[in-house]
Image: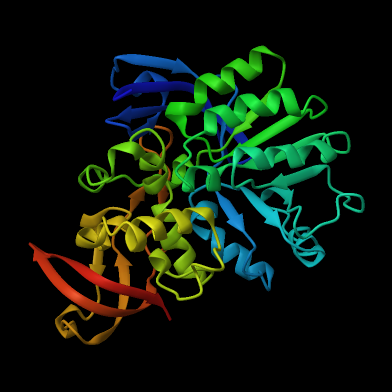
Length: 364
């Protein structure tokens, strides 16, 4: 599994879909491109029909306006991506989303906040923390035709049983017409997805390929028991966190004291566990956040002193190619004009023109 290409997945692009391939090297996603443009691999898996969802918004921290939702998604919109998945936590959220007519929004209902008997949507969102909790879906199976299954906490708890969960729901949810699975560990999940499809179940998986940020040096620090599970998950959502920082929905890398109790997103929990519980990423703190480390610059860098608080603005200069080889889609200059960050700096490492900071980074 260290050299794998996954082909024929569909990426939603401007309310249409294009076929893409995903390259896996050493257990990490190394490239997303047209299938014919991927570098050859030892093994190729066919994920025909699977959808890659390029954006994900969780309204755990309430969205107060249409503008705020747009701000969450502005990079995707400017880059040509107009599809997004939104977890609806209340009727107010549902009303707000109805005002968005240029986004192809997939609404998802959270069972904890919504009575399925009164819900007008046919989508139901369910987020188990263990495989045994999947049994709770039995009482909903006859009332819904689509279910959105979030298995991220199963992975976060190190169970690494995503494949087992996917196969289990086939026997459990015989009345469900479509199953949306988020996220999907591509190495473990594609074969299980294909087996479900052969049995007639319409399964779609979102793996947020557009958000993938991987750093091999950091991945090498992960424990061996995470090799096939949490290893990929930890680095597929780094960009989601840094983007959420701009929208002020969660703090970077979970440095907020309330984040451990009120997780705004499952990816935040995974990185929180890795950074603060496992203590394995501290030495390369800023790299876990970088869209590309060589593209990140720190304004007023001369004022940064170890042991003092610093007001920073993270800037990304130039253009960033969204998906090389698909189309000439780049995020225009200025789209990431800067994130205001409050930092408690423990160490400053200078490598050439780039500064790597170790410490706490808080949204301001």
